Amino acid sequence: MSLLVVGVSHRSAPVSVLERASLATDTQIKLLQDSLAAEPATEAAVLATCNRIELYADVDKFHAGVAELSTLLAQHSGVGLEELTPYLYVHYEDRAVHHLFSVACGLDSMVVGEGQILGQIKDALALGQELHTAGRLLNDLFQQALRVGKRAHSETGIDRAGQSLVTFGLEQLAAGTAVDAWAKKKSALVIGAGSMSSLAAATLARVGVDEIVIANRTAARADRLVQILTEPGSTGVLARAVDMNALADELPRADVVVSCTGATGLVLSAAAVEAALQGRTSQLALLDLAMPRDIDAAVHRLGGVRFVDIESLAEASADAPMAADVDQVRTIVSDEVAAFGAAQRAAHITPTVVALRAMAADVVSSEVARLEGRLPGLDDKQRAEITRTVRRVVDKLLHAPTVRVKQLAGEPGGAGYADALRELFDLDPQTVAAVSRADLNDTDGVGRGRV
View 1 (cartoon, one colour):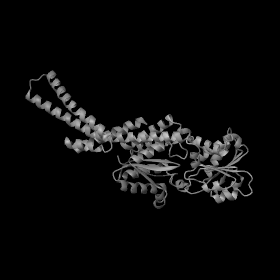
View 2 (cartoon, rainbow, N blue to C red; view 1 turned 45 degrees about the horizontal axis):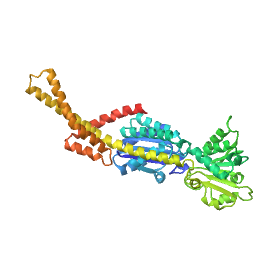
View 3 (cartoon, rainbow, N blue to C red; view 1 turned 90 degrees about the vertical axis):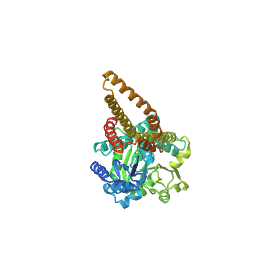
View 4 (tube, rainbow, N blue to C red; view 1 turned 45 degrees about the vertical axis):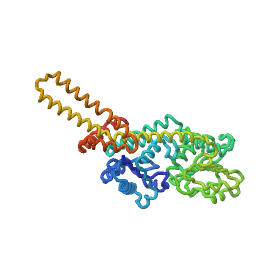
């Protein structure tokens, strides 16, 4: 296995880059086709969402693969390679498997534990299968990622983690007062309109704030969130959208500020908060749910401010909502990565074992034919019994070593056992390669039925 992933996401790049680095379906198709046309890649799949673009490939050369996949991402995303390169991340082999499994479980999402990513992974696999760019490795990988994600959601409370984080943060701001009572008659400013900010806005509306102001760089997203908050049958909260440039005007009017953007730098400086405090008689509550942080940590030294961020939430309680679930999911991911690696290493030796048994079957057929020439008087019953006996002897001799070599191949470094088997039995490399191709074609067909 030489799995390589090159990608860019909300964790590595600013929103301004991600907004331009988008891939329509037609562009994804061209990217996959060009990836296979590139020499280092034999399989390819692309995972494209509003918060990430990742290109997965089976490559035979690491450095050439990184260079080629990075160039292709830049060409098709619309962001120049020189600009995109600082934000790209690379994972290889087991680290690439660990990354996709973590993504599938929602550990790498803006809203931890969100389940929408599973549908996006399924779509990525379906596209790779339709275009025949996903072979045995990527079929196995993406199908296993879907199973790991479903397991995480069924065995843990990770899908409640994002909601728990917002609620826990508001509880810390309320400082012992019931959140509903604390929120009453307050005006809230939510910075950002992504998944976590949307969740925060919905939570604030539910607990009873009077007004919510949404500030976002992309006006369409902010307007859409306002529409959701104020649609018929909702909480009836007053909501409006403003541009990020209006933060200085909105801060003095807000009682509580929740920020969770994809920015790589600070969104609110200590100086901006200090200016907003001038002439203020009530406390300003600040909740920073972003990683990296949106709000300058120095604001905690300002009088009249109550500041809570991810770090302080973790310090507030070792049993804070989400922590235990995240730890449990991380354990699941680690176990599944180890199991996937062992299965792939074991599968690597299967064509060699199949070729060995095929060679043994040919030897049996040849020897039975030779025996018939020497003993032409054998009747059908005798001939059949002799054939079965010879086959049983060969099968028993091969059973223990082939079972054991499959077990050993599942261990780290186990690929060498396939080489040893081919050398010891002088197996034809072309025969082994033919078995591998046949197995790959069968896996593609079976894989499509398993999704």
